[in-house]
Image (tube, rainbow, N blue to C red):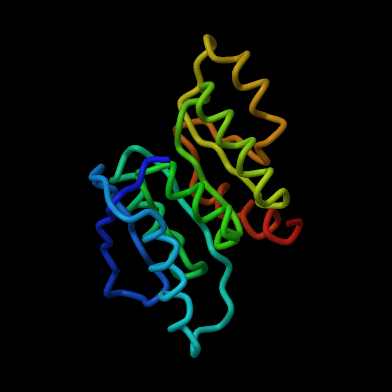
Length: 167
């Protein structure tokens, strides 16, 4: 398993936000899970908020979704799918939003997420394309909601409480 070093940007706006951007340099493995656990343990005075993980290769989209959701949820945004895996498998994710076109790798990751934590809701966003209909059909058994770009943020934010309640 490849190991990574992570650069953390903590928002000064709230104590419930972490943005993670990965630098691919070999390093000690479970750093992100430990940092996230330390972050959570220091939140004694903050009401119990659900943990939302946002993944996109596009850092700007990660940041935009983070800013939009940070008042209602504890948000971790990352450009590295391996970080999402670590957070789901250690139980730190209550819901995952992924912005990526469905492919074989994403299908395997979604299957892994459901094996680690079967009740974690998964939301997928991407630009619809007819050539990936078959892959989308396969991934739908793991995904709770799909939103095609351009998507309405209000629609996504209205689905999140329902998905979290059913988890």
